Image 1 (spheres, rainbow, N blue to C red):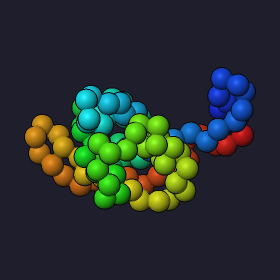
Image 2: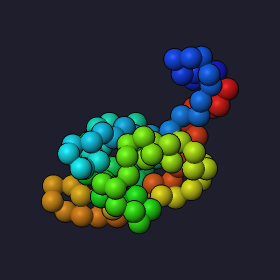
Image 3: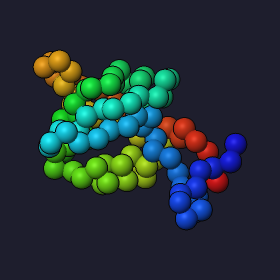
Length: 103
């Protein structure tokens, strides 16, 4: 399977988390979860609010930085998340893995 390329045609490694997040105010909100991807295996769902990433408040990290970390941290790394769903806080262990082979 060929790797992906950015708009300039340069190859890049895909995010290893298998989910898409966005900001809602200061919150980092899960907007999509890839079936059978690392986020789904960790139990994340649409609408979950990520509070902490590896012990660091998610509100203090830009989306670009969060996405960079999840792309550059090695496959196999387990990222500790603190998540809130429907007002209930819980921990999740997100084990990163390569979802799309690099070119």
